[in-house]
Image (cartoon, rainbow, N blue to C red; front, side, top):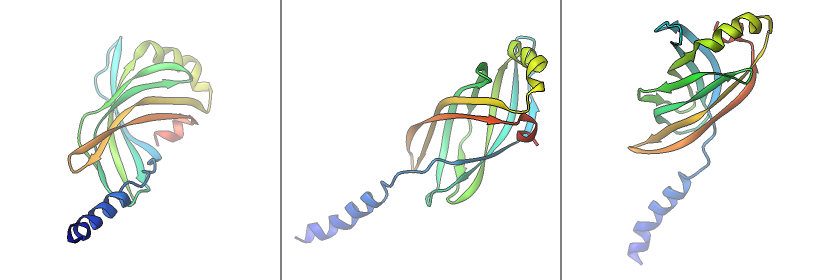
Length: 151
């Protein structure tokens, strides 16, 4: 019986911590910089600002995936640094995007006329706390005004 009183609080704590995690809320893109510039591919760096609506903090260990503009492949992105995610606060993720320059040239001729473009991002992110990490899918699709997005 005494053993039950010792184990019960830990079990309740474990169940309370298993609440569904809310997705972070996208705010904006800032600090867009061209890294390597090449004819076949280039590297673009930028910061993506999110808000964490959860009451718990965590860490983003890594993330990677692909990005499309108006259903045309733009490139592959990756995050290779450990990012602290504070509870109920904004956080910034530095992203590196390897851009396929063939599409950029096509898009610059036709896409700049459009105010909004369809942005699609698919990938995975490894997020966790206390050394325990879990892979979460990244799935975003929405219309964005590129001029406003990078202000």
